[in-house]
Image (tube, rainbow, N blue to C red):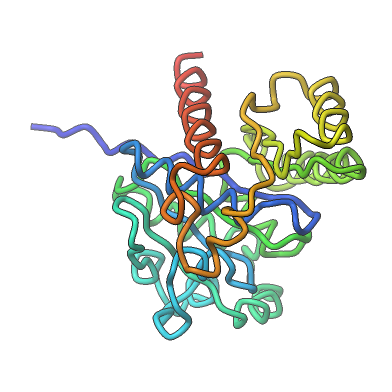
Length: 268
């Protein structure tokens, strides 16, 4: 009797070449929200700062095997996966060692596809519905590896004056990756972050982005919220730190939108 093969996880890169836009915050809180609604999720921290690892409460001394070990061939992906305190959410952590991986990747024959190869080998296990990759805020070999491995890109976009300029640069990068590395790469969606309803500029930026990008922009906006900012210092996502705060509620709604978009894509 043949058993159906497990569904391949949907791999989403959370990326923006601009720092401070809520990228890591989105990765860990969206991952938590997806896991909470029964979608087992893996977060891969591919940023040498390791903020996603810290924000999920995995202390540096607990990061025995990391993304660095996976990219350099010292460990398989499944060996580097660690649990978090959130049921259904696991992590491949990162440390500052990862900043040295780029030099080691340069001489590898498939240097842009090392993460993809590791994921292809692992994803047959069918353990996760989603894999979220948290990238550094720059176009590096690490970011290229993430985009080459991904099905789609999720773009956190801060509601500030230079948002559209940064978005245009990222869209050019995505197009470049499509042309040279991953022709199937899509934009899953653009999520507006740090929205301040008291600030007319936030409304104007949101309107401009929606006018330019249409339905690629999620309906859910992530508000500027002090509880979201406080949560990482406690080593937990905002949804664990304060489930009822506006930021946590927004990420729950965003998870619903992500799942709905994936369902529509699957039947299209």
